[in-house]
Image 1 (cartoon, rainbow, N blue to C red):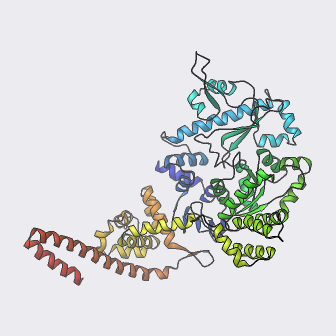
Image 2 (cartoon, rainbow, N blue to C red):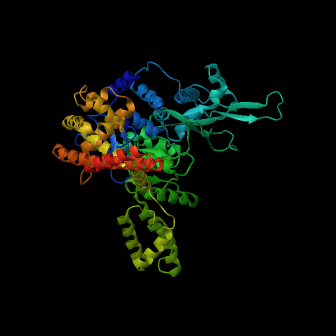
Length: 599
Ligand SMILES: [Zn+2]
C-alpha cells in the first residue's frame, strides 16, 4: 500500500486536488484559502506545493491529499485512497473491501441508470415528444446533453429489469433510491413489491462536485399524469443527501472560483437556462431551503452569492431566511431582481441578455430589504417606523461584521428619523438568540485540549518541530542524553532520536521511511515551525536565526519541567514509604529529593 500512496502522490498535485474543493489564491510560492474545517473570515489555510502538504493556522489541522479528502468527504483512509487512486489512474495492488465498495456499487448503478434514461430520451420512448418539449422551453441539444437530461418511460419495472439484466441484485438497486417498495395487501402472492420510482418523467441527474451522479430530480412529462407531484426527487440514500446537494455544482465550480461569485437560483431549469446563456457559475438548491451545509460548500469557492429567487410572499420568507444564514456566515449576498418573466428560465428563453443585465444590476440584500421595507410601510408614522425597524433589525443583527452592522444602524436611524441609541437597544432584543460562532467554539476546544495536555508534552512537541526544520538543532538535541528518557513520551521525538544518524538529520529522508500517522504529525509540526502568518495574513517563513534562542529557552523550560515531575514523583513515593514505615526507602528518597532539588 505504501508504494500505491507514493505513486498516487507523484501523479497528483495537491494544488489540483484541493483546488477542486477550494478557491486557492497564490501567495508567493504557496497557496491559501478560507479553511473549510473551521469558520473564519481571513484565510489561514495554507497549501505548500513544494512540500505537497496543507496546514491551517486557525484550527491546526493539516496533512497531505489523503488526509484532506478524508476530512472533507468524511471518509475512512481506505476509501480516500481509492478515490484518489481512481483520480490518479493508479490501480491499487490489493483492493480491500470497505464501505467504499458498497458506495461504489451504488454510484455504478446510478451511472448506468443515467445512461439508460439518456438513451430513452434520445432514442427510446422519449424521442421527439420530450426532446421537442425541452427545445420548446429554449434548451439546445448540446445543453440537454451537457446536463445529461433523460427520460424515465412509463411503466413499473423498466429500470428495475434493465438493472437486473445487468447483474445487479434487487437490494443493491434499492439502495440507489431508484425503486419504491410497497406493501401490497391486495396481492396475496407477494407481500412486497418493488417498482420504479420515476415513471413518465423527465430526469435531471444531481451530481456531486466531480460530476458523479448521486440522485435525481424528476419532473412530470408534458401530457403526463398531472395529478401526480410535479417534481419527485430521490430519497435520502447513502450517497444522496438533500441538505448537501447543489444542483449544477460540478459544472459551475471552476467558473465560480474564476468569477468569485455564485448565482443561486431556485430550480434545475433555471440553472440549465442560465448556463446556456453563458452564466456558468450557477447552482440551485433542489427542493429545500438553503442549508448551512450547502453554504459551507459554496464558501469554499467564493464568499459572494447572488440570489435569484421568486419574490412572491411565500418565496420571500424563505429568501429572508437564506439571507440571514449568509450574513451569519459572513457571506456577501446580493439580490437579482427580474423586471419581467417569472423565472430565469423564462427570461433566458426570451432574451438571455436581460438575465446578464439583471445580474449586473443586483443590489446588496440589505439594501434590497431596506428599500422594500420603506416601500411597504410608511416611514413617517409611528406604526410604520415600528414595522420597518422590526423587519430590518432582525437582519442587521445577523451581520457577523460589526462595521456593516453599524453602517446599517446609522442608515436606518436616518431613514426613520430616530436616534441610533433607540435602535441599538432594539437590536439587542433582536439578538436574543445566543450565537456562539463555530470559530469561537473550535478555539475553546483547542484551548481545552492544550490545558489537558501536560506542559512537558507541549514543550516536547515544540522541540520536535524545531528539530525537523533544522538538522543542526536536531543534532544538537540528540547529543543531550540527559533528556532522552523523557523524549520517549513523544512518539515522533523518540523515533527521531533513534533514526537521527540514519536519516542524516534530514526531515525529508526521515519522512520517507516512517508510518503514515507519524509522517502527518511530522509534516504538521514542520509547517507550523517553518511558517507563520504575518501582519496582513501573508505567509512568512520564520527566520532560522531565531531558532537557536528558542531551542535554548525550550531546553531550559524542559529542564525545569523534568525537575518538577521528578519532585512530584519522589514526594508521592515518600508518602507511600511513610505510610509503610519503610526507613531504608525514606532515607534514600530524602537524599534523592535533595539531589534533584540541587540540579
Ligand atoms: Zn482551519
